[in-house]
Length: 130
Image (tube, rainbow, N blue to C red; front, side):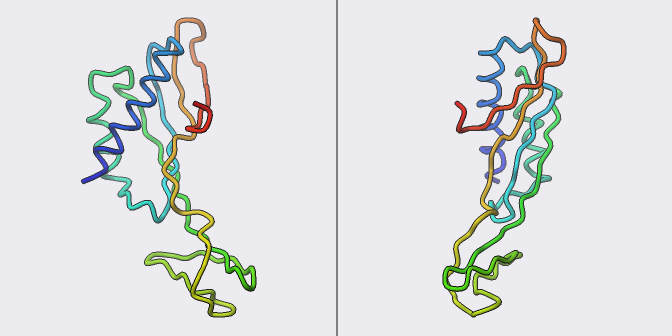
């Protein structure tokens, strides 16, 4: 059940950012989860609630946004949804090698929190911004 370690990592990152910004409570976290990330959203939600206990995120809502897996064929440039299990052969030319464009995401897209200065601030952060 690696969802617990993912939930703890998300809570840790959000808690660190919230405390640095002086947030008093975190209301929601939006997390993108790629189709091929190997994450079960219901299990992640359950683990997230447990991981939030006794933190500034207690009572926080986790919103997950599913990202479908897409691939592109190098030789003919066709793009397609790979589905699950993933189909990595080009449906147009049959080439087996494909470049995955999306579907492996597991990233925090936005966080809503409250702080002492602004009652309902809505900062957005991505892992690349830290």
